[in-house]
Length: 288
Image (cartoon, rainbow, N blue to C red; front, side, top):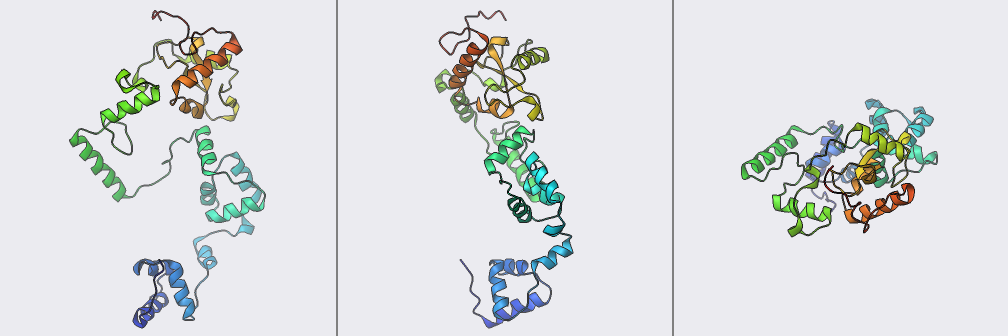
């Protein structure tokens, strides 16, 4: 809700603050109102305000005409975000957006940017973000309290989860009921056969292509990951492995029975492997 200045003394004080060198933004914070409210107040009282372009020139911002347009367009198409481009060329975020749209470049949505970030290997959303000392202290206090309460989980981020909650979450991922849950699959060890030789063998068989979305290794900044089709980490054989990109591999953590059946049918058509019941891979004894 917009704040109204009706007191003459307050109006005079606001004008004096601006004339003494305080910015419109700082004055707005002092009176707990938006900067546009202060701007309109000054304008109504015939107080000349300095344009934003003046401040941009002081801070070293470049005008749109001096920016290397072709370079910015090419870098954006390669995967650089508008925020990073703005920092690199000392321009505002809106200037980069305006420049790209003027050159008929389609701006990526938030979801598309996130997918591209994963494909380029920049998986940490906090990369380059500098937290204040207050935020760091608050996080440390929260972890210390959780540790004393016995609810802290090493490696966990965000909300502290109880063991029971994690079990329910794990059972949902595995597609089973809570009473049938036995262990956390992600913490189970791999057997000795799951090595670099086996992974390269699977990638070579799949022609260095993700078997779900079809993206080639050349378009990624990292190697394709090798996925166990039936989620048994002790069964590292060619009938139970296939190549996936990082995004598609992450998708397989949900609805596991669907992905097992889908990948088994795909490998059966491509390589002639035989499976039973669409879920269980072969009739192997546990000698591997």
